Amino acid sequence: MTSSPASPTVAVLGASGLVGTAAVERFLDEGWDVIAVSRRAPDLDAAPPSLQHLPLDLTDRDACRAALAPLAARVTHVVYAAVAEAPGLLPGWRDPAQMDLNRRMLANVLDPLTGAGSRLQHLSLLQGTKAYGAHLHPIAVPARERAPRDDHPNFYWLQEDLVRERAAAQGWTFTIFRPQLIVGPNHGVVMNLPPIIGIYAALRRAEGRPFAFPGGVRYVWEAADTRLVAGALLWAATHDIAAGETYYLTNGEVFEWRSIWPAMAEVLGVEAGPDEPCELATYLPARAAQWDAIVARYGLRPLRMDQLLGESHHYADRCFAHGETKPRQPTFLSTVKIRRAGFDAAFDTEESFCHWLRVLIDRKVIPGPR
Image (tube, rainbow, N blue to C red):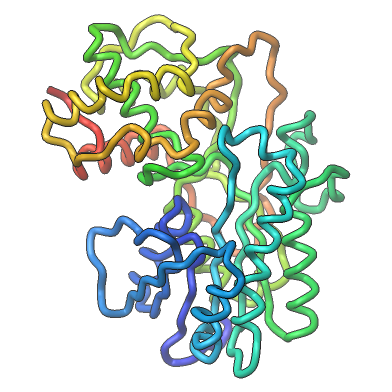
């Protein structure tokens, strides 16, 4: 294991997001000092003294320098899970301006944290399957980390080049992670499905309609629970074998939406029904007033529809293959490399979705069974 200071300190960038919140919780559980950097505080059950929240806009270079430079002598590890996505989500994936923005955000963090007096040892960078063009064309089955770069514009490559250059020049290490369909409890974020599924189920019940699967063609996929991703981030921060490596992450099994739909229906207390195609990016925002009534009826947290969705309703349509009728090319990630390296956690994907739906019910974000 890597030697580290008596009180290692990790700065989690994008701490209110899906991976960021999970990382904050996991590092806290292991006794680390954690600096959670995000514009809004992460949604935690408790905030111990070892947690510091630093509200910060990563697009503001001067603000980042002022806030992060004083921390350079304290921060030993960084988890970079921040991302800027464009409205509508998918169009921004091909936008050069959005790509450049994400590179600049990372630079705005690295510049002050690696300056004079820096104690940085390791950085973990979150990416995804868009690195290999999975959103543009079929990829190898299974995808493996040793494959060459896919020749298409992508901010992942811009960020990776920046990290490799700085790490080599400044003497710290890094690990890159590429999980598949991350599943957790966060609402109001760019890509997370449990809140969207819970809101959709509640609206269908209020309308007297079954919890029908709203998507298109059947296909088999993989997912990664946030607890698994957070565990991998902690592992990389404490094991030399992860230095300079890229790893895929999945729960360790495949799934198909219609196969796990009945289990989610049971948790939510709704009746599943025959498929009924529905564009959630349109359906959900159009029912903001109905959602307000559900909030009042069930005594939920006073969160408006727009506060809950983020860009995840657009992501849901893509994940559910809404409007697609042709067979979808599979996107399977091999996790042999990270398992051989020593990280072998696995999760039941059906139970992962059901677990986070129960958490959202317990937190009064979505209603449960009547």
